[in-house]
Length: 490
Image 1: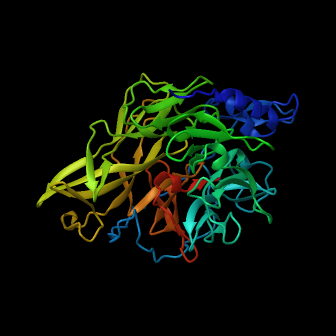
Image 2: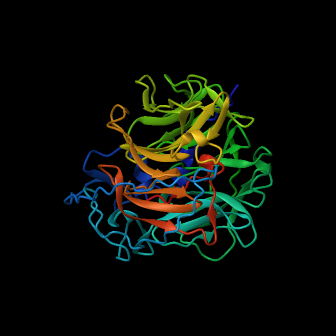
Image 3: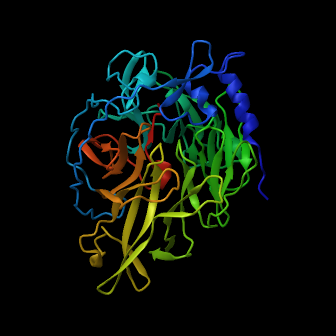
């Protein structure tokens, strides 16, 4: 039986700690519990430390272009994109164009008092607008939690020299980043936090895997949650706050893939054989009505009521070597349940010489406003009972089909249904991640972080991609969503 802990009481206490006595807020992030503001308005924290609705002044929309994806080369490796991109940084300055309807007018390097004044991709840091950080896990002989300005190639390790680290996650407001250091694959691993912008000094250690159930810390999530959540080894979720002297708390006895709702209090997770459970409005978690028991990896967006997840309702598996892999499909369903289950990306199968060419879905992620979803379609050949990923040298029936293709699918923000055909975005790419303003897409290709500006209407590329060469760090992908790049929140 799942041990249920009401996280709302913990998060409510945290909100009081974050603001002054009698103050409702200290910045706009404290106003998230006010819910979604009316169209054309935004909640701000006023001079009296109260949350107040302000009307945005729309700016003329600029056509961002419709450049098509030109990448077609097949990678010979089995990892999700191991081809080395020979391109260098194709422009490191943030586009100074307007951000349609968002009221963000200050360009990079310009003076600011709040991030809402800065253009897309920027953060108000030390009173100037600077490029957002992206965090990920890389390797340089060891394993390193690393951060980089998205628009400038070059990465910085969050742990000290020769100390392994992994799984960096930003906190609400974007001024802290958490990660695991030391024995990152064992219970001795430490959960640590550093402030942004980075300054000299050792990180603050909050707890260890040994102190929180004697298990490895993994599948960690933080922003927009008011506490850091992680999975104890293979199942069971714990949380901790950054308050001095805080101790880890067991939130659930089982389950994995925790994800927070936009108010920082609601959360969802999945458990093997039980599907997805959701806690809403401080209630104990309950199964998501209408979701398959095979559902896993839930994702909230920041605006709509739709939850994104993978599932294998047919129970189909294939063997890549000795390992049975479920053939997952991509779905959306209202967080409250009871709505219509929408298929966003199905598995595919078509006959080829000697067998079939098939695909399944992996690594999905929402655009912040729920208008797009990015996902990876993994192609493989099936001959008899033997499955081989395309891109592998032995996958002769795949022809020119890549191993992975990153797609974007437009989604109806009311119904959660797909709108139009999926957009083929990049071959041999994986682990897509939208920027918090929805204007950029980060992903990993050939072990390199790549950031691509988007046309948010067409879902196509704008301007050349910014590629972070793997001259020091190779970005890891082998642990799936645990290694997905995370954006510093605005």
